[in-house]
Length: 201
Image 1 (cartoon, rainbow, N blue to C red):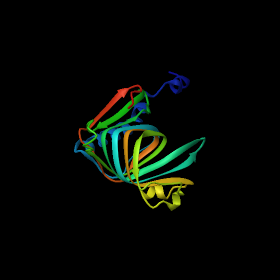
Image 2: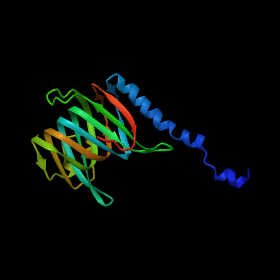
Image 3: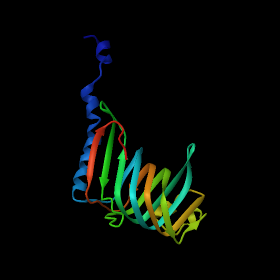
């Protein structure tokens, strides 16, 4: 075979190896979650993620708005939060395989149980919807003047911020650029699936 022909061939074995770290990371997350607990510093970034929850009850809520290129983004978070019926979906492109969906679901559909617990839940959301009820709500606070919520939000660069002592949100949906749980994340009734194509939450 000529050198030109060799250079024109796809090195499938080498390409397949590039998928191994991502698959290995997913396996490690699955093992950790099998105990019902994923420890500190769980984060997803670089790939859009969709999060939904039937109900969220949080303390220490704060949010700010900043510009990310040509769009406004809300950087928001809870110091602590309890959730019910969580779904988190990421749809990356994997070498060879193409587009796949990694989906995590946990909890049940009873809003009263709120059996999922997260500390320092943070979202960079380009779209966030739901029905909210707040106590101690302050609007129009510069992000560097926020006194409630996670420190990561309070150190943000946004000009407009809001904060509340507590926030109860039902039918939450967040289309986020990144998501992070800087503290612990306790999950019950966990399910993780990997399916071809786009099949998000």
